[in-house]
Amino acid sequence: MAKKKFVVGCFDTEDTLFPAVKKVRMAGYKIHDVYTPFPVHGLDHAMGLRETSLHTAGFIYGITGTTTAVSCISWIFTKDWPLNIGGKPHFALPAWIPICFELTVLFAAVGMVLTFCYLCQLAPFVKKHHFHARATDDLFVMVIETTDKTNVDDLKAFLANSGAVETDVQVAEPGWWLGRYDREQELIRETAVAH
Amino acid sequence: MASIKTQFEVPAKMKTWSLGLIILGAIAVIAGLVTKGMSKDEHEQAVFWGTLMYNSIFFTLICNASMFFICVTTLAWGGWQTSFRRVPEAISTLVMILGPITLLILVYVAAIGHNHHIYHWLDKNVMETDPILKGKVGFLNLNFYLVWSVLTIGLWMLLGARMRKLSSEADSEMSLEQGKSYIWRNTVNAALFIVWFALTVGSTVPWLWMMSIDAHWYSTMYSWYTFASSFVSGMSLIALFVIYLKNKGYLEYTNEEHLHDIGKFMFAFSVFWTYLWFSQYMLIWYANIPEETVYFKHRVQGPYKGIFFLNLIINFIAPLLILIKRSAKRNYTLVTFMAVLIIFGHWIDFYQMVMGSVSKEHVTLGWLDFGTAALFIGLIIYFTGNALAKKPLIPKYHPFLKESIIHHT
Image (cartoon, rainbow over all chains, first blue to last red; front, side):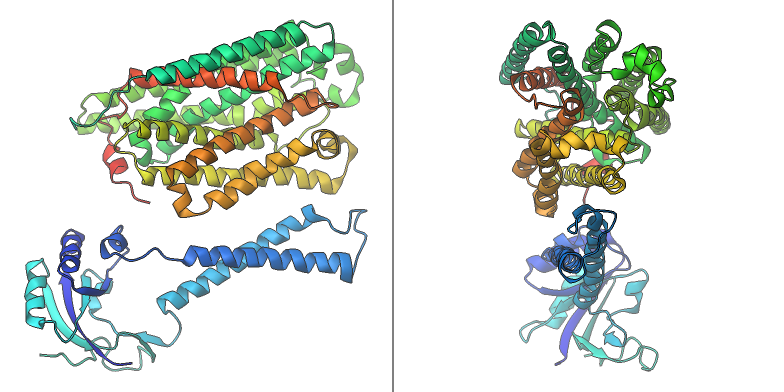
């Protein structure tokens, strides 16, 4: 994938981050992402992210599990291999409910974990660019995508005015690639700094 | 703060409607007393008193569930309920009124009416000869029944009143130290209530009041099942009053974030109720022992079949499919609809729990049932309205109020 040019603004606290996110969006800049040391309540709303559809996927996985269990057990016990178990009817629904429930949970849980990993692009050997190492420690890092028309210096000044303690311009790969963090020498800042 | 309406005034419409329901219900109950309660037929008498019993127990339990909700969230240090806390508080004052009514009905059935038709174990001859009932005589006897019922309802009233009295302190300014002491005393009182609640609703009282109608039969799930039923209806009742007040322009600090959490309780405890329903049913179905299946015989295969499965659809399938979505729990119209449906569903559940045993051959659901329910609903609306008007709607100086205002799910 083609590399892109990003302007990075680092903030000390959430209190300066929230108004800055608002201002940046009001000014019409496109936020690539905001990296925070911990999950910040309400940041998704401030950034205008859409609701996740992970739960819809979970519901679909769940009913797939239920359907699998019901159809599989009922086929086995009524068509394929009917057995007399304690004089119960062959179609003994109450006895199957626990298994149907377990399979529902199993399908939903495993499916949602895998979907979550897919949506977040988490997998072994999947590597992504880190805009600032301290985003995992104590800095709130806002990354703004630039276009040909963006005046980078203006944007940097704008961020500094909004309370950024550090600003930076990076040309980086926005997506993921295969690689290993421990094998690559330039751990964090492998990109050419554009100034 | 000045712009916020904190003082509830009972609207004329609320008064008219609730009084109308009370009058309608009273007429139905009096008509029932004349036609059934005073009839020579023992079965008719039992139907009348059974109807009064399950209605009064159900509505007392769902009002008491409000106090349980307050105490549980207090113990868990949940601040989110502070902004609408006065609503469950007002609903729980109904225990002061419905509690004695229930007690009178129970005492009449057991001690004055000696209604063997409802409580088989009141018959001394049976208790001496029946080998199964002989073993239960320590629990199923009139003295224990009366003492325990009086204690149960009395302590619900007393401990609930203490919580409500304590809550009034949050209407006047308090210092940091006072605030800490307030939270501490709140926690202690809530814990006392919870302990008593566990000893009564959580175990003994549903066995004593309702399960003992089938004196031979027993289920260890029964009390939790009753608790789940009453708690999920209690949460629905809170939701209805919160939405009503929101529509009237009160409770500005309460928004769809709070409604979402109430909706979660309604959803989760509907599923919990089903879990207990299923656990009770499946084990008995699987083991197929006559002394256990006797309870389900006329419910699953007899005249109560329709009500029995309708119960499961209303109380499990409907909340599961409708309330599962996040947007549904934040939608005032949908939550209102579901709250009404859940309360109706669990009322039907209580109906079949009691009347399914009192009147095994015939489904008695009719004007008397709906009339009695109207009486109790009218009482609940009338007295909750009055209780809401007595205190400011928002405990202005509650230490956790800010937590409730900025609540975010």
